[in-house]
Length: 279
Ligand code: AMP
Image 1 (cartoon, helix red, strand yellow):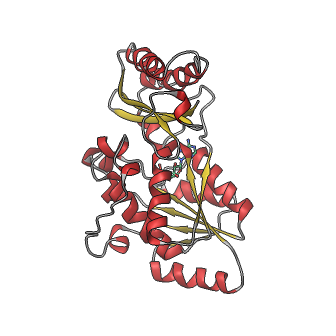
Image 2 (cartoon, rainbow, N blue to C red; image 1 turned 90 degrees about the vertical axis):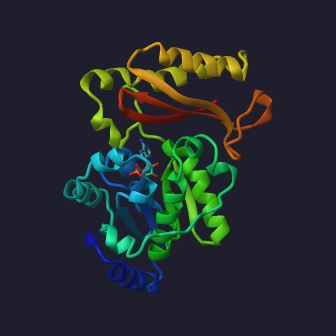
């Protein structure tokens, strides 16, 4: 496995691979890797001849300075983990490599980028579109792998690639969870012991709520989820929306969509956790 820090060098290496007819799979990450990230890489290794991971904590997608400053960084360990699952290239640029000058591009990504995370994290998806479009331009992957934990992010990236006519297939991958159901996240290491013990309440409540469908209304299910999680004094639901899985518009009736998805954000103490469930 090669670890590369410069755009020029990565482009040269991948050009050679492409010219010999190799298909390229790509897994963009911010590092601090866990089994969820590795499942994306495993899928890429299965589907492609060459697999590339990027590790870059992208400052333009953080709307909270403290979150950026405290984001875990474990490059050496990450590289060991990636090599063990068959990754061929790790691209780990520094900030001046990705942003030699400030990226002033504003993406107009429509409703999928305005609701939920878009409303609560101003600028977040614009930053995601900035970095992912740059990374796609550098890697030129045939397929790119994204976790369904960030369900809305997948819709946003699909819209961006559609607008820019990028010839990349976006491959969604299922959420990996800890044994107690908590969705794996690089931010989970920030939870105190007490918070870590309580955090599985989110996934447990979401799962339980699926058993109420279609008997209870959308509104009743939403209320149940929010009330149950907020009952724990350590937890505060920021939003819970049940949306159409394609448009991400909130639904009022189950019959409005074939793909209802419940998307939640919860503050567990100071740590912002996200999760989702298909109904
Ligand atoms: P991040 O490093 O948090 O930006 O995540 C990089 C990629 O890994 C994104 O596509 C995430 O959706 C995905 N990912 C993060 N956590 C999980 C998980 N628990 N299961 C599956 N994919 C995940």
